[in-house]
Length: 200
Image 1 (cartoon, rainbow, N blue to C red):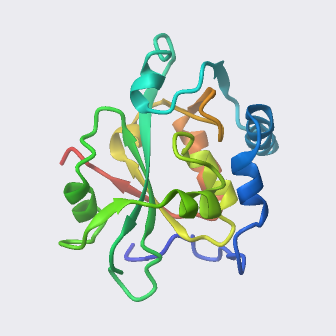
Image 2: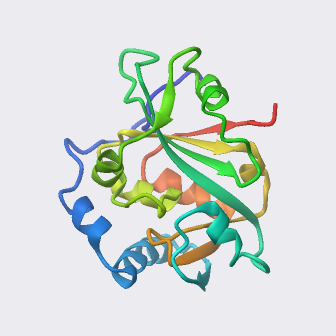
C-alpha cells in the first residue's frame, strides 16, 4: 500500500514509552505471563499454554517443542544503522519461521534497507521499547510499544500457517495461538504488519 512507519492509519502513538517497561522486563515469570494473558483474554483470544524451563535461545525452546501444534518462530529485535526514509524509526521486530535463514544482509534488503547495515538492537532499547529482555522477545511484547517505535515484519510462512508459538513475555512459557488471532492482537496494538517472503 506504500504506507510506511510502525503505526496503522489512525493509530495514536503515545508521546513516550511507558516508564513501566523497565519494571516489566525485570519482573518475575508469573507477573510477565499474567500481563500478557490479561491482554489476550481481553481480546477474546484463545491460547494453549506450555510451561517449560527458561529457553534463552530458539534451540533451547525446540527441545521442549515436540508435540506443540503450529509453526515455531524466532523473534529478532533489529536496528538499521541509517534511516531508509526520513521518518524511519530504524527498529524492527522480525518474526521469522524457525527454519528461515537469519542472514542480516538478506533481512535488511527484504526490509527495504538496500546496502544499509541491519544488526541486533541493544538490550537497553529492547527493554525501553518492548518491555522484555533478550531471550523473551515475541509479538506479544508489541503491547508495550505504546509510542509505536518498532516496525513489525512477519514471515509469510508464519502468516500462511494455521497456528504459531510465542513466549508470553517470559521465556519460561510458550503460547500456541491461531495466526489469525496473532494478527488480531498486533492490530489491537496499533502496529502495521509487513509480511515478508524470506524464501523468495
